[in-house]
Image 1: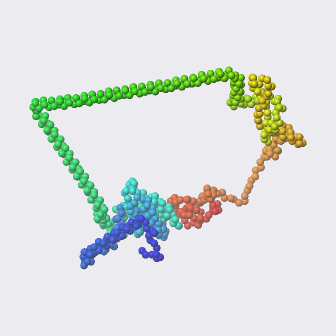
Image 2 (image 1 turned 90 degrees about the vertical axis):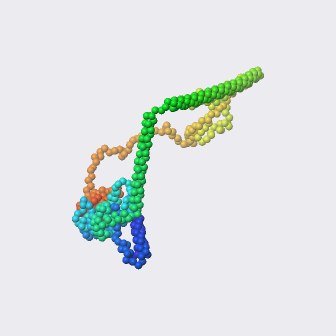
Length: 561
């Protein structure tokens, strides 16, 4: 209906309500179009046009196969009215959002008018006052068989979510307020539904439903297809029976002809000709088989001969290649032997001319190999120890070293060079017979600290130096101080602390808030656990829980915050 101020009613339109409005608009247009055509055919007779069909009551209670009743109950008339107003404002969310979207339904509709009666089940836990103060709404729905899984449709989850998310917002909630649901089929609906809204009895309504179902073109088409399938099945059975009969008749006729032939004797000439024909055919078959087997044997022999020839050729080729390789190796060996003979002749000639120089060169090569010989880590460490012990050294000729070499002793701030003399390994025989023996100086560098030199310089400068060996430990330096020792004579004095006022002992949760354990007038609960006599579930001054109805809320001191 129109409202002031103007409001946009399409805000509450959903897919389900749009589908229903579109169907009703189409139905009204079809009625008016039919009446208009009747008027054009007979414009003088206006009394025959039945405009009352356009204003007939809705067929809601015979239009759907399944229905759901929602009974809104309260303990008193005033509580039931306030509770019903709040629930009515949320029914749109239940039908369009929760039931329409989450269930496999092809169509769902809420009847906007309520019935002042209780149609809840007799087993429902409702008292007399609740059944008297009750108003009921009906929801019609049609199941989509293509999306349906199983045979039962459960709406209990959607109803529990509706109570928890939407109806729990009502304040103040009074014990006895509830929403009770029950499912019906179209034939199980109470009579008051048809008498109140269709102005007819339940029997007349069922007759009208049957007529509408027969007039439905979709159902007519389905019925026609069903009959066609039945007729096709019957025709297939009839054809099958005919073919079976024909097969049986043909089998019988063949058996009869065989019996007649067996009973009637054949002439001898015909039998002899038939026997000769059979023999000729068998002989021809045998000859064909023999020719085929001979041809196969010939092919096999030819293939074997070809394979043998190929194998012999391959073996000959391999022998030729092996002989060529042997000849090449023999030629190389002969060339090397000639070269060695020439080299030996050249060496003999050189020995006659310069034997002394050759011997000297050999000694030098041996000495170089001796000095440059690679050693393992253990051998090198043993040589180093012998070198430090003085087995390979002679410290006698340091005075013959030049001053320039002495100046280069210090190579850094913290290292110096040490010089050692290594005697010559072997004198050359003829080139050095008349010359005096000389020693060869070999320099080996080793990094040493400059601690002693620095100490001597400082002592010469007049500074008193005390080494680590000369230091003496302080007397009592390693003793524990007396104030660090544990006291053994401490007996331990007990101290009692008494308070004039008594303190409340509380418990804290993970967030640091005080836990209210409740009392006779309050029971803490974070969710709805059911109806409790004398209590109401709400969010009050002491938090979420059950409060005693009609009792003033007093926050204890131990939970005040």
